[in-house]
View 1 (tube, rainbow over the protein chains, first blue to last red):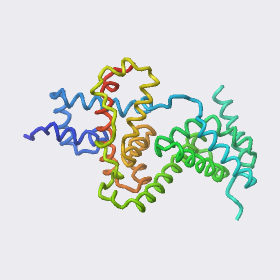
View 2: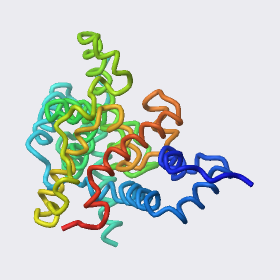
View 3: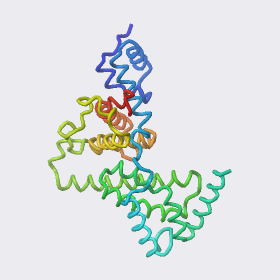
View 4: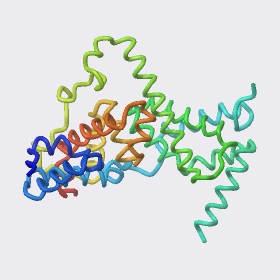
Length: 91
Length: 205
């Protein structure tokens, strides 16, 4: 009968568990631990939320490109116009 | 139908831009500029570096456009080029830093920026703060929290959880093993979840 992993073991393996990078036996041990440990289950929930909603949580505050982005485009366009055409520079 | 028209419009712009029409090239990029800039900024963090990286990315897009085969959407293809340009800026910055600040070597992969020593945002001490902040302010604070991560951890988190690249691809891009990607990802997620507990627990204004 295998022993269940401790809370610290579960915590250190949480991302490997989420990424399905653990061997089956270890994965099962963590799954059972999460069923009976509210603290680790809470951490697991937060990590899943963080990972699943990162795109939304860290979304840009405004859809408009900032000044720096427009400046980068203008500088790039100036260089491209100097070069004369899109595509690799002539050798 | 609208999507089809938009796609046809994009294809025509791509063809004109690839043939050397600069206005078409600018029109092609403009709708995606904010997204490209934001992706670059999340990786390099510094606004001035982000501008340089974006400019390099846009020039690379221009040079590579005649070779664009249309196997993916233009925006996805161009986006990857900008991300690569940002990673290149980050590598250059890291190399410069290593040359001039040898003492940072003792900090290993964290680029010498000890997380705990940073003036960090401690959400736990003001648990109710998000309830009273406007959404925009919360976003800004979340961005600041992300910025507290050392480069090596932030880049992995951004590529994996925000850009949704797979672990193998990130490992290849950063020249590290998939196990190291997962290790850094774990440290980044643990750091962020600790500081963003109120938001991640559903207390989002």
